[in-house]
Image (cartoon, rainbow, N blue to C red; front, side, top):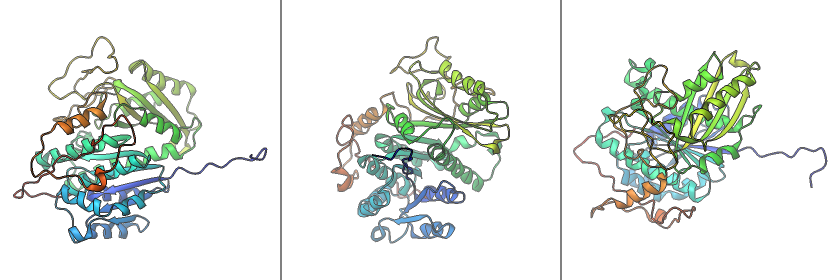
Length: 431
């Protein structure tokens, strides 16, 4: 029994960030530049040269090389099957690196070999170990080709089956930001890295920073794990005119694809200086209650930071969506009645300034992996099982076949990977 008047210390939440493949490794190097939260950064790759570059940037980043005998220390050349074999060969390394984590971030650029092949393996490992997991991944630019996009979507579907939360950024959406429309190719990929870095940093800071109204690890766990699907969105907005405008900017970002109006789980964190008013906070939360599902669960946090100097920053994490994203070309006017749980709500207008609450920016063809009903985890499983298997389809490594899902509602065999095939006559870069 604790002595009277003595504070009981609480252990710090241990957060590990796995950057997988070339894209994930790049994000880790961005995080290492300002790792004030002391996150544990782990670079995973088959390419020894890329891992050496990561270590040269910051020796605090742990490196895990996979499948050295298979790849001879080189990349996978976009071969997802080879990446999966490499992960199976060095399963023990991955489990050791993940051991002791309370929260695992998995970041990768999907569409290449290592990122697409290994990220779902890490997601399943976290799931089996009952570790809270959050994926922060990208889908390729359109100019990278339809084949690479199909591979990315298959990898995304596999991650959706076992991740607690999965934030997906379409690279094409980066170009929707007015300030990014004329940037160079090199700068564009750096901008993508910074978006992923910001998403990871904001969620980690939310958990590790003590605020006036605090959001802790248990709150984030509740919102992530009560969702009917793993799909999640993160929006950031900043304003000198109060919390409400900052919130509206956060949910109107061109980076968001889903209709926020149909989210039933919200984490709203407001950061301002000491002048942040109760009225401001109330206006922002009321706006969410008035424009979302009647069943919405809002967890509010506020942080005082004198460096804001009159500005207010709003960070929104939205989960548990009633509907799936609408494809471009099927735009409809908002329904007269609020959609009920389980029903699709086709609500959308073209992006304009300002845009009504929850209206996402239309962008190109929606991925098949993201267009799912509310019970998305089970639906994605059924879709994966329904695909016809060809004679030369790659079989999932044995160490993953013998794993049983920890959650009873997920059917056995849900993690069977579809075949990933690359035409030998097509060049492919593993980002």
